[in-house]
Image 1 (cartoon, helix red, strand yellow):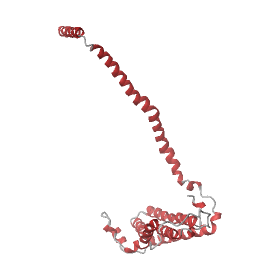
Image 2: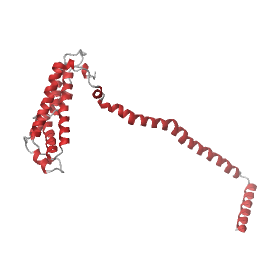
Image 3: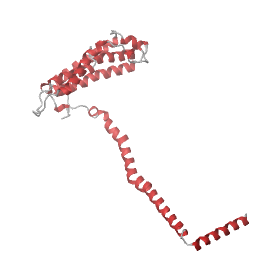
Image 4: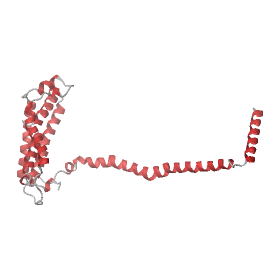
Length: 254
């Protein structure tokens, strides 16, 4: 099953995956001191300090929405009551858990290493270098952290207490802004139509037809030339005399 609304209670089965997934959710939501918080905060601070306030507020909104939809995914999948599942469903094997656990550790401690970004990027501004060294308390930082915590806490509270009152998701959002439909109408259908035109008309009628017409013309020309090449000496002599007379006539007329 891939529909999250039909899941729930998987934390009791996937006990390790539950915690690893939650760490990933909080990290992507920008909760400090997890690693993505530092990079997100650096981006938002530079957008604001360089005067790109529109980009700053769009980035802040996107950051908050990230926490909202990921917490929703976490709650619907791992909480939200126990769903009846096949008894054969078990926790993921270590070959899958170990790599994810390493990523989770990096998400927890990676941001605390404080590796300067100029070690990895050549084209970097002095402001980026300054912001990448240490944690700078600013109103951008307060907004980012407050938004991240509010997005996570409010979303979890709403789904834990009032999930049954939320109703169905808005069609526009559930359909992913109708991007699949737009792609199908604007790109897939025209290319399918073009492919059918090539397969049903252009290739059999034009390409194959031109090849067939060339073959027929070549065969007809060969038949005419074959009659000239009869293999009879008298015929060759007659053609030679005819050719010689034609040349004499042309020279006389010129």
